[in-house]
Length: 278
Image (tube, rainbow, N blue to C red; front, side):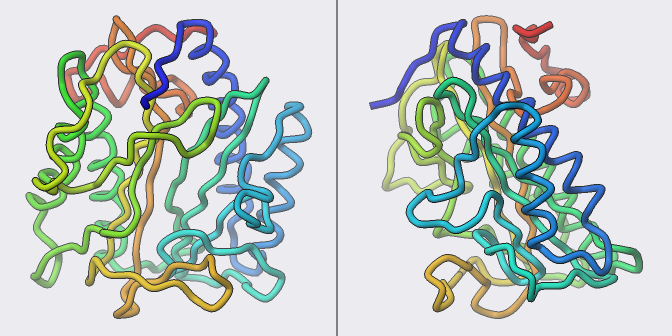
């Protein structure tokens, strides 16, 4: 069952989303050469405490940290550690969430540590981020879930990959519904699988965490012995971007974006829904 939210509930999710945005800003600033991924986790904990918010990652299925820190070939679910020291040239994806009054926010971004990154890595992150926004723009009244998947996949497939070949759209992980829990129905693929049909119709109050994960090579992944860390099977580096989005009568509202998605959606010819928090 898909949980449909009222406008008041969406406003609460917006509060949680702004805490997530604050964590993103703080961890992005802290992701410098010499910092450990455990340092970034501590930064996130501080932001949560400052906003009287609860973490939704810590303890989830036994996960031992507040955020996921996925470096280079790690696609998702990297565990913060004192042993992982960021160095110049690394790429890190940080995934985090927050809970306010029982309502969840969840978002991820990819950042470049230091300088000197290869152009294909910069392009990988750009393609992944833009495919997320293509999916967000497809959250229109009357569309179906598959239309979001198709928009993400179509954008990625239309981008030329430096050096040739195709980007790997990660197959085993995708987006999801969000609300009173972090992961809810429906599961959102980042590609079209005709066996799954069109999925539910998008109606006001429909909330999704849209999160493409893309690699420079394979779409295949494996989980390390810690039962959490997910890497590409060929060792190629990856990117992960995510926003939580609510669909309203007035359009999409990007719950985890500082400006509710207004500026970026305007570039795509989409009018964002008014921010319920002003």
